Image (cartoon, rainbow, N blue to C red; front, side, top):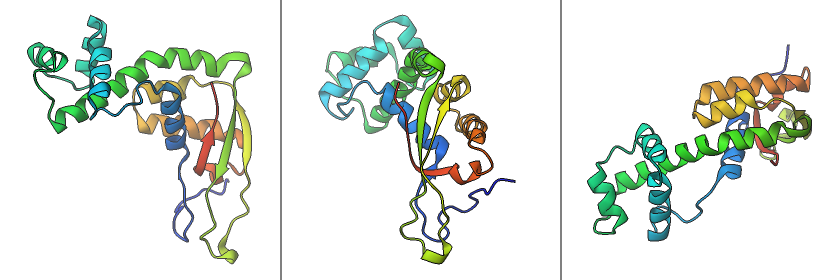
Length: 189
């Protein structure tokens, strides 16, 4: 039975769920528009991305941007400015549509040449008293199949992503439970 990290912060260890670190890294790989949505340039870039084609408009509506075409036109022509709540909806819709659009490309790159090498950095135990620290080391592994991970990430399904990541780290052997919570996970595509 693996040594699982049941209560990762109990003695002062710091880290996040491994699946959250993977999602963060995939978001970084898929990131497109860097300018914040609160700045005119960032807002306009997101609105153009979300309204460029009928497919984009449909995806934006499914992602929660449910304003009228008249309101969208006023925003694009800069006659009106979206409220703070609508700015948040625009940002969320952009992130979801962007994920869906780049998922297939990311999946192809991550699965290429037999998979992608992943670096797993364990929990930060610098604040844990010495007698309570675990001996957990930095690990690397080659992830050959990214399909379930990328699909769960693209659909923003946290539970499915967590399950897919746990099924992947089982390949680390009997100590896989020590890597459920990590400081960072790194890989490139």
